[in-house]
Image (tube, rainbow, N blue to C red; front, top):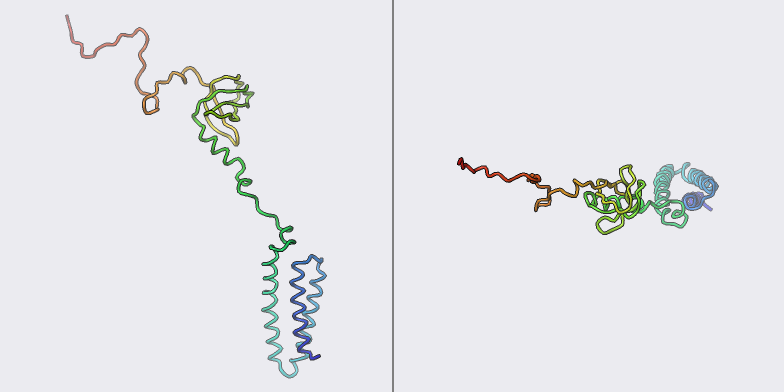
Length: 201
C-alpha cells in the first residue's frame, strides 16, 4: 500500500481515537494509541511526499493541525449530552434550592405591623395566629404565654419577630386614614373651655 494512503488512514485512526478518549475513560491508554497513530501518519506522509513533493507534506501537516482541535472540540461539545457526561457533570441547583427561605421571608415581611395572638408559649419561639394563619414566631427574648396579644415587628429567615402589645398599643386613636391621630385625648374631669367666651359679667 502506498505511504500516502497509510498517512491518511493513520490520521483518521488517530482522530477517532482522540474522540474516543473524550467519551471513554481509559486512563490515558487510548490517548497513547492516538498519539502513536498521529506520529505514524506524519512519518508516512514524510516518506510519501517529502523527497519529491514537499508541498504536499506541508499541506498534510496544515490539515492535521486544523483537524485536531476541531475534532477534540466537537467531542467535548457532544460529551455532556452522552450518558457518561450526564453522570459526570452535576446539574445546577433548582431556583428554589438556591433561594432557600427567600419566599417564606418575603411572606413574613408582609406580616410586619400585623397584630395576632400566641397559640403556644413563646420560650422564646413558638406559634402565633397572625392574619388568620398559624405562623412560626419568636419573641424578643422574653417568655410569652399562650393567648398573649402580640404585634409583628420584624422577620428573620423563616420566622417572624413579635412583641407583646401594651395597653398603650390598644388605645391609640386611629384617624380615618389609618394613621394615629394628632388630636389630643380629653382628660378626665377637664371641662371644655370656649376660647371665644368673652362674657365678663
